[in-house]
Image 1 (cartoon, one colour):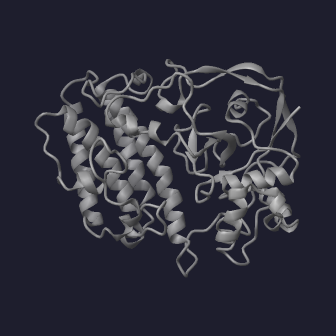
Image 2 (cartoon, one colour):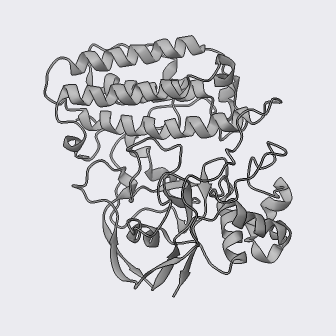
Image 3 (tube, one colour):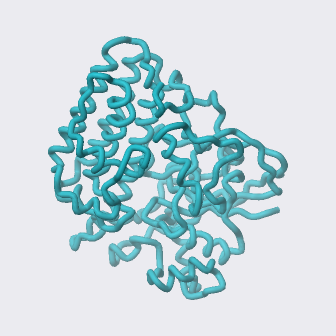
Length: 397
């Protein structure tokens, strides 16, 4: 492979032939378009804060990924759809070149949404043509699988970002679905673990995983317990009613500063639908790490370490480990022992972000089907709360 090669990621478990790889690619690409079906063109061009990207940009950037790392690298006869797109839709790959400023993506009225859709069709056609040349997997099959998982990440971002965008509409837009949770409410309990030497991280033979999920390694844990339930809206309401946002002793210094500067008084979107009934049994979501940590202190508990979360992820008593909300951990996002980023620009995918962020585990209601894993390491800054992020409590025994 070229300088953008990555370590083998066991494509065989996802696609064993070129036709099956094409089917995977097609399904992922179609799902991105499915997410946008209820949106109007105007919805897809707006950026409400620097962390939020327009839907149009997500649609273009995910196409840029396939064009940049596969078609331009491995297909000699390929000609770029538009040379300017290398700059416009490069997210953060300095090894590729300069990027359009992230915080100004909403100012980009050209290319139009129709032109972005044409770009997607062009990329889809080019990939399909190359995969039709043989039933054997091409040399770049691993990169195509990575690109599909990359697009699935952006499918979740598309939903979190458009929710933030539509929340600014005077007609109410999209706000939190504050209805009763689909699970059967049960009293919170605790699942214990004896601690000791455990192993976490993805095995090389376990199928696709991002590079930051490995290598598998040993971690020492003290005896601990995880709460069987996620923290609910009702639980969090009690924290608010007890003055949670007015008591500096509950907050980290950065958190208390954010409460003052941002005027936080409740999770994001709680004030977006006045009079709407709050589903008290539903998991609280759209809270930052700083809020999650303050709540845990108020409750006399703590947030779990990511290793604690992973070693108990499959315990049948634990509810909502996947498919509800991402769960903040008290683990900083850092490389695992012996971690090495891939060579070339694609090595910037995860490795260069391993500082100043906190790890979340699990998956959310917006995570695409099949994209969740117990070893998945999501990561955001401690103040971020526009994601579907929630809370699970832990304590030492």
